[in-house]
Image (cartoon, rainbow, N blue to C red; front, top):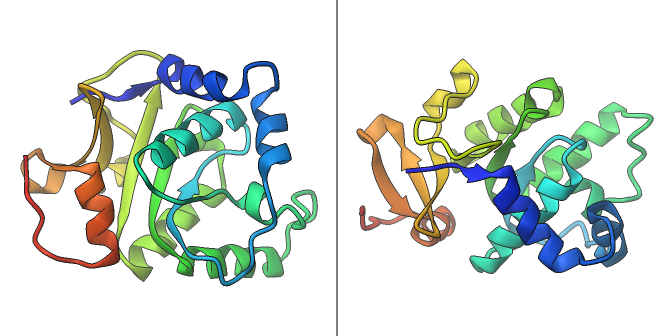
Length: 190
């Protein structure tokens, strides 16, 4: 099982953006979503990773999933003045998502919001996974200690898999895992 590399994710983002920067593309294409909009995935990420966010969002959308990115869908929120109302809006959006994917990058460790989002979603519906994006391919991804209790999305042989280390390195095809999120049932292990 291997991680997504920064190069792989950035290449996917660049295929979409061509001339525009990732931030410009994301901001240009973003439409304000109604507060009742439902999503498959809440993408927890560091704001410093705009290009990685675009690449991962596109990869997940390529897999047929809808993805919520807070600064795209709720652009009216003032990131320079965060209040309890901001946290409540994020919590409301996490409730409207069936799962959370935690985009683990070098910048993730500096985020104050990501651990909170992970814990809230874990307690809310338990459907969370880590998607590590690393400088080079790794077969033995190790994040912060608490990251190790969650399954992680893998990029082996162009398949997206969720590896649950709690079940002795079994893997579930990502499409099956994310479908299971919306209607829990027995899923085929590969």
